[in-house]
Amino acid sequence: MILDLKFRSGFLALFCGVFLLSTASFCFAEDGEPEMTQADSIKKAGQHLSFGARYLKSKQYEDAETQFLKSWGFNPKRATTARYLGRLYEEIERYEDAITWFLKAVELDPTSKYTRGAHVALARIYIIQEQPDKAIGSYEALLEFDLTAEEKIKYYHALVSLNVETEDYEQALEYAKKWGELSPDDPDVRDMIGKLHLQTGGEDEALAEMEKVLALNPDDYATLEKLAGMYDQRGDDDKAFDAFEKLYQNDDSSVFFLEETIKLGKRIGKSRSWIVSRLEKLHAMQSDNLGVIEELAELTGSLKWVNKGLRQDPQNGRYPYMRGDHYFNRWENSGAKQDSINALTWYRRALKDPQWKGNANAMIQTLDPPLTEEEKKRREFFEGSKKKKEEVETEGKK
Image 1 (cartoon, rainbow, N blue to C red):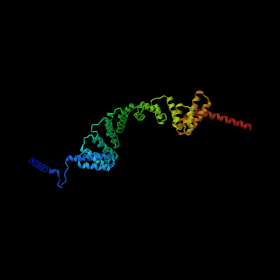
Image 2 (cartoon, helix red, strand yellow):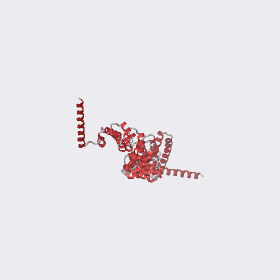
Image 3 (cartoon, one colour):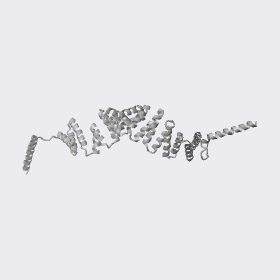
Image 4 (cartoon, rainbow, N blue to C red):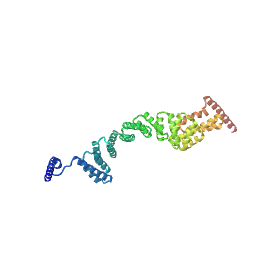
């Protein structure tokens, strides 16, 4: 029994001696302090990371920073710690530090699904710092990940906006087209593509895109107005008229839409009565518009409009000339002397306006033509004879 106990004690002492000798190189540091194994470091890093995450959640930023940095000290290869530090510094608006740690996270684990969050955060910070080129790089990096269609649309939208901001319209158009492929029935993307085509000189493509927008949403009057203007510029009068007519029917208080329908109505051959009706509506909206009064007077020949014009613009020879025409036409039909006298009176008033002097003279000569030489001599003869007779009679009375 005693021998057996001694044997066991000796074996145990021998085993412990061998174990201590074999592990001395990593169980004790040179200064006598125990060194931590890699597994222990990782474990410690995880503990501090967990503490830091709790502090960050409760907005205890100093304590969170301390814990995250300790975690990083124990394990400087863990991307999660770098991402947490990035989040912390972004929340307290230490953006440069946040960028440093988010970039470190991307470097350590470039393909992880969690790295997407780092890229999103970087893009967000670059936008705050007004660095659109760097934000574009972050969004482009996001497109390398496995994304849903909704996520791609969101990032394409951001890339379109950022490229427009940097005035790279060609690249913005490329991203808008990709956005459009994923969402072909979205009027917003069709509108964006149309605008970018216009910006890059592709007017035909822009027109086609805007027509698609209108087909998707017939009551999109903003797009309709752009199309109306483009049709007008391109000389497509029928389409331009239809577009402006729809705009006017939607907003009959718009002078611009009404004027455009009148202009285009003339081009496509609308009847005189239709044009007069529209001009009368325009006059109701702009009673002092002399151009409208003048046109109504021309189209209708009505003294109502002639007199309005004469009252508002008495120096304009057009209106007395038109009144002369009114009486001239009556004289031609009736032969009444008074009508010819009235016509001459108004034509003579029109002589004061140099622009109408020639026309007025021509009508005066029509009504009261100059005497021929023969007629002049005849009148001189009779006037001379009459004068002599009057002299003889006067002398006889004396």
